Image 1 (cartoon, rainbow, N blue to C red):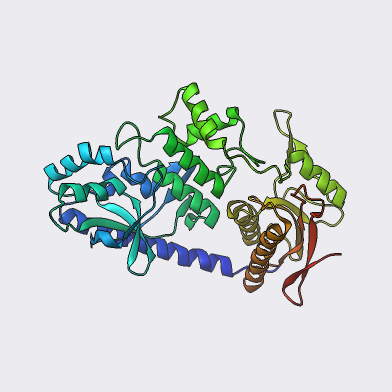
Image 2: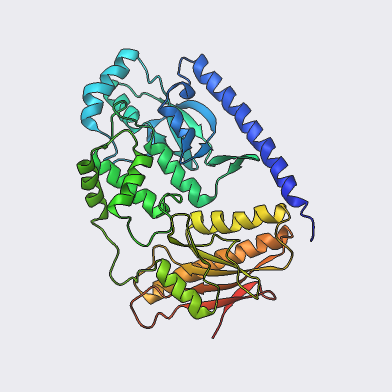
Length: 408
């Protein structure tokens, strides 16, 4: 097998970058403290925007700048039903800011476009500043965050895959308002959290396993224990939130694609189904790189088009195992794919499928550039519409053109 000399080089460059970010953050925070502001690492809730332990994982964002900014350059990004709680700001927060004479905890932002920034945390402080000092044009203190989310692994801090990063960045912003401190959330707010996180990853980063539609009421308790472990603990309250959330159930034009449907589809294709039993005696499918077809030897990936599913569970697994020498040159991969948020018309669904094929083609190019001799040989899209014209489709890799070609 060809030895991969590129991956260690990438790891070394990443370590240098993270070390530089840690040093720059320390300098930026020291400047803010010198000017009379508080260290965000000293506030248990605010620190969750930049450092978070969740679902058995550790994530990190880095502060890259501190300064006073004009409120007019700031856009809002909120995790509540309403962007600010005007009553809370008027009656509690604005008087407190006026008493302190300033915002002691700078708001958190990221750069959205040149000259504009998105508020990641501190919407109520920004709004209350206008109430407290309405007669003045008051610049707002802010820490600007690097956009990349890093995950702690055995190799150190590494960038989280895009889908997982989007999921946990929302979780981190959500968990900065712990009850009863810092204006706790309402049930309507939690509905917003659930919708946004479900749209990013319907498995809630594997908490629920593969999902076809909304979780059951019993599974929903696991989501609430993860997202709001210290609030909304009454069963009746959680049921109300659950009902608020699922009122927009999926269209009946979409076929349910669960464990049984995928197993039947794999068998119909003549691919190994990969069925096994859990320790509790429940049917389950083997994980990727354990699910292998015979006699072809191809690895089978049952996957959706979510970045948190394909890039994290498939692409990263291949890269890691190749770097470790556990995958041989010439390895083939077959993908059995479901579009997560499938369109209800075949024209639009076909566009979604083409978009995914383009992603796979790009990763195939990445593999070639880094001499990772693994090929996505086939992609099968399972039928997802009740429309009889949706029969699914198989696409095979054509190395000469670097494109997938639809099979008859």
